[in-house]
Length: 559
Image (tube, rainbow, N blue to C red; front, side):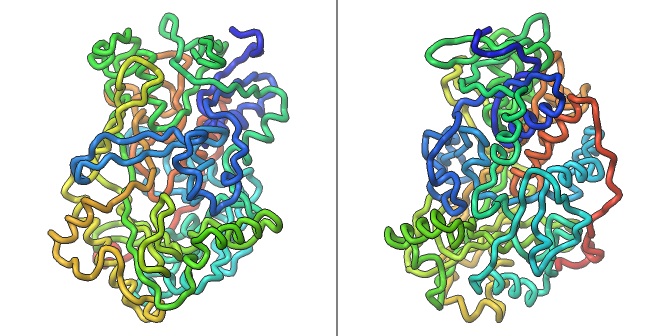
């Protein structure tokens, strides 16, 4: 062990959403020495702090792993760029900052799949513990009893000053959908205000919320280095092999090793450590420690399309989509911490059901007052706006596999997007339901024309051709180290996040999700870190009796 690293009890690989949370909560035990490893380290890139700056963060190799998928057959063999955060905060350092818990039924299904202790009643107290919710300051506030108000993670809502945000909400109401005061509270279904991990005009990453305060305690050590593999001796994890400063060394752990390196890197590290499908490991010359074929399998994601509209009025962000406008927005934020730059500009949203018989929302919307791609390229036609829409529970499954036994090689990522026929039907419904919403009176003063897909595309075949070329990832990967019962051959970790077949090793991040949750995954990932820390510390929050509402007419009505 390096002389520069003190004797440590627990080594955590990855300072992302879950890793930062784990380090902070474990540090509450003053007798524990925790070492947190991160390949990216600290970055002073200015766009990381300004909320609107996420258009500039993705793709920068200083804080993005810049993965790429294999050719996706269902998407015209496109290779999708796949950003994952590299640096303190992980993907919470570069994401769109949208905050969603998921739905009650998501977690109840987790428990039904063999994960005792992960029901809605079990996880809600952890969401409440982690939150410092400012939604009560909003005129459309929800039921505060469902929320937390003293946690480290600040949750706020945008000001919705642009009339397009409320027009979208009102259009949903006119189309017959409910309006929800708080989609993270009592009622997810409906149209309402979007929430974000933004505080006092700045990105509130997991590093800001959890890690920075924890580092002041004295029992958390931060190490910058590239994790090559977990060191396993006699069936027990005893440390992590890392590369830093051009040297390879081992950081030993007296108690446990926790891998929290993302749904892409966590299975990669396990496989390099000899944990995975035995035949595949042997093919790469890797000694098998535990034959767990579920490592890297069960890869899931959310896909979405950008439904874009040309604006009838010059009230969109397009007026600022030039060098002078961006400089103005940046300067206002720099000197005041306010203005357009202090918001991610996703300030209204919706969760609806595609058809009668669907018990809880299976479509998510989030509205943006500019027509622009995720990489920051504006749509042709000047002023416009868009809504991101996509199904929440795709049946398609992919995998993460090793490219070679060289730790420096990126893994092979194949999502098998659009490989299930239901995906196509659900996306067609998304398009047609969206068109109906934007045809309501509340939106008519603002809509000049439909840019994308364009009203000329109407038939199933026409829409399918559009989808194949234009559907995009929402960047919500999960499931590659699936949690399940110890006797489940495809499970990787048990309900206490312990790797099955190896002592002293856990995985705790979105890779353990058995199924993807409704909405963005930053919130559930942080919750996983909270709960995993309690498993390690031998404590548990009492279950909640609060139950969110379900539309009583879901069996017979779509809205």
